Image (cartoon, rainbow, N blue to C red):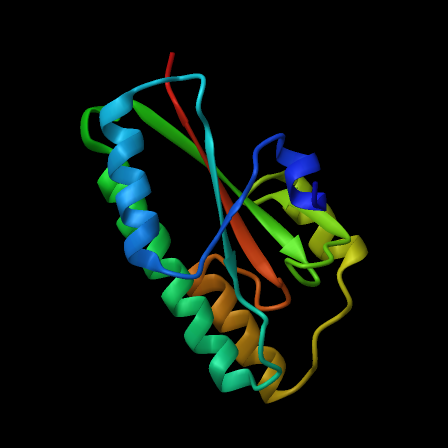
Length: 146
């Protein structure tokens, strides 16, 4: 059992092949079994190059939006997004995104980002995508509404 499985109580599916994740979402959509939640982990920080990290943030945001559209038909599913810091392989902090927990973690626990132009670009990316560039990954937990 890895750390994320212990946090969520669900064995996570790591973002390796998006077609596979889409097919799992389709199966979940048609099964409508509320006892089978699903956790999908999108890794952001595999590379240390900032350009590749920006591309991974944009692709993660795109994949999350596609999944939400797939599962939003009929309003029978809901999901929560969790931030993972510093990496998905060895997380130290896992917290719910767009909540008071995220505010606390960003202000008190995450290291301060760079200043100058790089800092402004990070702030711009965070505001546009709603994903903090300091994160190592994003986990989406999908559950059927009872």
